[in-house]
Image 1 (cartoon, rainbow, N blue to C red):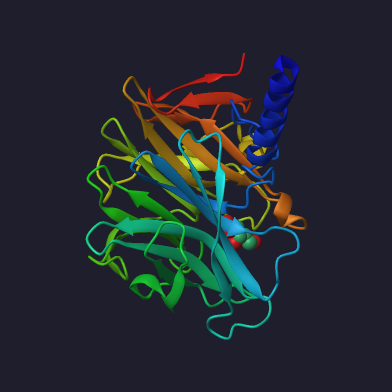
Image 2: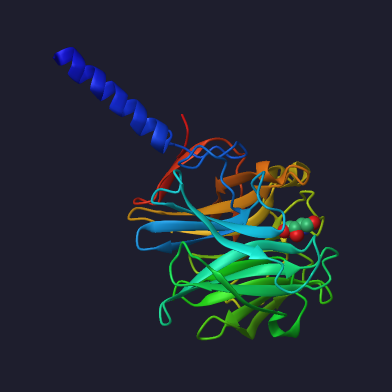
Amino acid sequence: MILRFITSLFFCGCLFSAAHGQIAKEINPGEPWPDNNGNHIQAHGGGIIKLGKTYYWYGEGRAKGLDTNYRYVGCYSSKDLMNWQFRGYVLKQGDPENLGPRWVMERPKVFYNKKTKKFVMYFHLDDKPYKLARVGIAVADKPDGPFNYVKSFRPLGMESRDIGQFIDDDGTPYLIFESRPSKGFYIAALSEDYMDVEKQVSFIQAPLEGGAIVHYQGLYYAIGSALTGWRPNANKFATATTLAGPWSEFTDIAPPETNTYSSQSTMLLKVEGKRSTTVIFMADQWKPSTQWDSRYLWMPVEIGEGKLWVPRPRPWSIDVKKGTWRFKL
Ligand code: DGJ
């Protein structure tokens, strides 16, 4: 009897761990990152929003075997930033503007509008030679979609390629977009319904993409990468006391010879806990010929008093309630 009880407990345990995968106790920068199904997370060039106690991570879904006529946005949810549940491909989009078979949808970012109760996704929409240079918008009623395509346009009438998102402490949303002809990136306020890019708040004259911003202890920190396609380069940061600037000169966020540890910025995520605040540098390690296997380099940064530095990557863990992190022992 006791033996049967122990045996059934053992089988239940096996089923539980098979269904839910292993519980991750750390983040391993640059390693495959399995979701709850054991599949490498597909949220490249992504962004994160927090709703209540849940984080939602959206990014390019580039899994092997997906229908190449479509572009996909993967969505994952987590309460601890280490274990991620796959919520599905929340946008499965066919060529929306007759751009040709190698059309491009990159770097999706989702904003939640409390007034309209809509989730508004922005993404970089382009043709193969990257000449269209627009943003596309898709909308959903729930964080895990389905998102429906609405329109595309050039924000503020400018060419726009890489986009980033920044939500200020007061909840105001901004789109960051790189504009090549003017050699820099724009920080722009969204319209009240988030369906348009309304106002230029700042133009940072620096030829950078992969733009991201965080507000930390009274200073805005902006980071970006140089324009080297899929190849990594030395990402840099600048600071300002207001979003409108003036912005300082850009300086390295890591030893330049490491090319940001072979990664490219996509977001700076601020985790405010009861005890401390951690800022995470979220970046992609692209593998252009095997994109489904591109990796994520997430590291807590050393930040404050105008300095920002990404420590040499190694496994670490975070406690989102406390806002603290530590290296794996
Ligand atoms: C760099 C960008 O940051 C990526 O999102 C992608 O557009 C590649 N360039 C394409 O070369």
